[in-house]
View 1 (cartoon, rainbow, N blue to C red):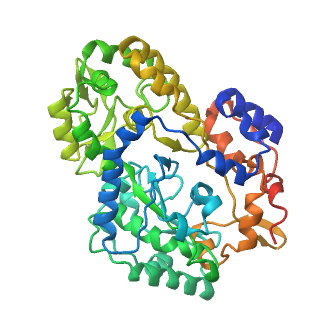
View 2 (cartoon, rainbow, N blue to C red):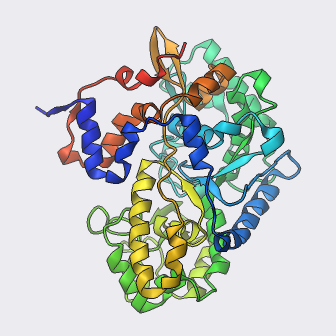
View 3 (cartoon, one colour):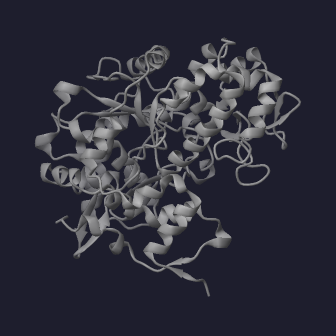
Length: 473
């Protein structure tokens, strides 16, 4: 019989595995204070200069995708961006909550502050744990995409024809007539979106989310709400790298293409999540993932004698030289790894990446290790790296409704069509303690950071985790 863990014991176990996040469960800061900390950062002038071409690429993507729609991108002084989301239609409660937290203090001041954006991970399968090939609604699940496509990447999936009634009819769930009518409203929203500038599913997701976001709020707030623009990050990053990797004077260029420095980086980052061999030999990937066009999937690379190679032969080998890597990025056959993404976005550009607890843990470990590398190969970069903040967690859960006197989670479509956010609810959220925001995720968090052999049965129910939301009516 498995040993049982209380809430306190589960928290203690998490702290052992991820000490970087130990303070999350004692944080008495209110969420409005947390928001102010998240959006406050003094950027080094060098970082601001480096960020300019990245901002240009983001603006270019927004312009090409949205055309003449009313988009009011506000970069602020520097890049402070939610990177926690896995690109999909607004659905998973913690991701929706993270997007709200990013704009919490000014969410009803679009006229003054414009819109804000996130950069979402797109190299995830359609069957990613947060989406499961579809959407959750009214405590039921609808599969949108065919089962045979479950492992295909969101970022590379073709333009899709949405038909909510058809997918609901094929579901194992039984939907009431009122629920079907709500799904019809969502279909009407999808039908109203202009997909003419969309070349793939991830573009459609960005446009659907842009229009869906305001429906989370009651009607009399919608004109005031700052819109959240969700962009798939890998496309922008890959385009940036095609120019960036021509410059020999950056630490990442040397990490990839200078054999001596590359050996040092491979040794130091061994076993760190987001790099390589973090859960034993053969896990993670070296610098890039390889994309198999026929299967629509990504496959890991090993590093052998200056070449990236896949042991199963699922993707072609890539010689680690600038011309070859840039060519493969342009052809869409390479996808930057977590290591490569944040070596550029956070450690070189100095962008403030807001993520989940997992990102805080691995990014903080990466920063420490990257500093050790820089001290040996480029000491002048160390002072810049020291200004980078990797401690910003925005993953929490904020939206619930009463059902038979019990609290239940609101997923994306629930907020849009069953339980809109009111001004009163927003004001209450601002006063929620940060530790109460993370507590509803304790069960998932525990299971994510513990290895199966060490897991214990969790001896508590969800209602015990929702105590910070007793005010929900």
